[in-house]
Length: 431
Image 1: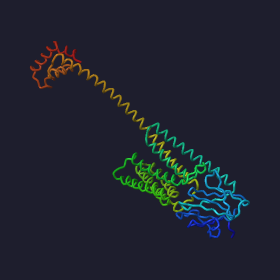
Image 2: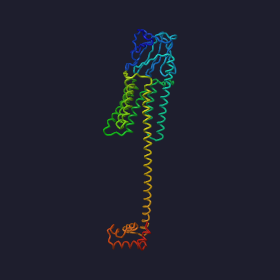
Image 3: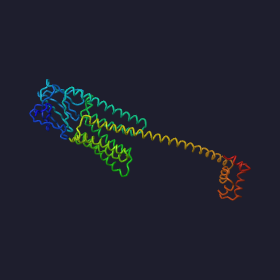
Image 4: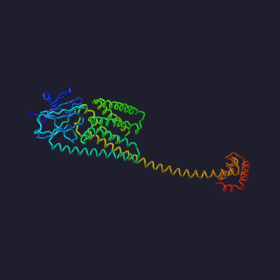
């Protein structure tokens, strides 16, 4: 059985002391899996030959630092410029085979090495650029829409959504090597990736604290998510200091777990068909998140990974966020309309109350002027008010527990002080 010319062999340089001269004498083994998980470190790869006269060798990962390609003569092959992932142009006429590729993989031992002819590479590159344009265009448009919603309704929930989008975007930027394509050289984009994942978990906690009301039997979710974010914070600093893979795995796991707890709480609140639809969306989302950001780092493959995995998951979440944005905006608008009607009703009630109050105030002011002017006694004031309201003598006497004679005396005294002769004159005088 003949061996395909592009068969790749690998060797782990545990000591890191191999040179191009010494590695030629080392024993390589065939690479059967491109993902060896936590078995990270420095690796050498041997390519015996290529099937085409000219080809492009590409390593489709951002989790690699030192990368060098040598031909059999020990000549260093220059890396191509303006590419998304590290790429090399190789030719049977220019290079002597076998070729030796050296790479340092500080995180997961993941080697997605592809060898394709120039036509296939150019076609894939165009497709990649189209996908990149679509993804970042969608991301920026969604971010702008979120900020517009915030300025329209002044609701801080949209600021939360903006931070979520930014965190996801930061993670994807670090993973898909777009910075390398743009010529922005950052030593390690791993930190940006970890920070993006961490911020998503942090925003999940903030959303739960500020926008969801927890019942007494749901307090365990709050304390669980607090604990998870605390572990994630420690893991982030641990990863930044040590650059160890387990720090990134912990950050990713904690962020996914915090998000899952938030989704569980939302599902408990949701009712009817909405709960089942959200359950399906969240389940699919969690499967891809765990597969790409946890299992992949451990070398466990549930689904083969591609360069669009991170962007695909981000688009799925962006779609979910867009739906939540529209629902939130609609809910706020509906609430605003209801509040406007309530305020309008309250204003009308206040106007009626003010009208009544103005009438009462006028009556009170008029009575006070009469009291001050004619030096009326307290009981005379009360009788004056009742006569002005049209009450009969019997009703007034019964109201104040007065005899008929006593009421007549008070009434006569009142008439005398006011200079009136009959109750009809008093009613004309009173308001």
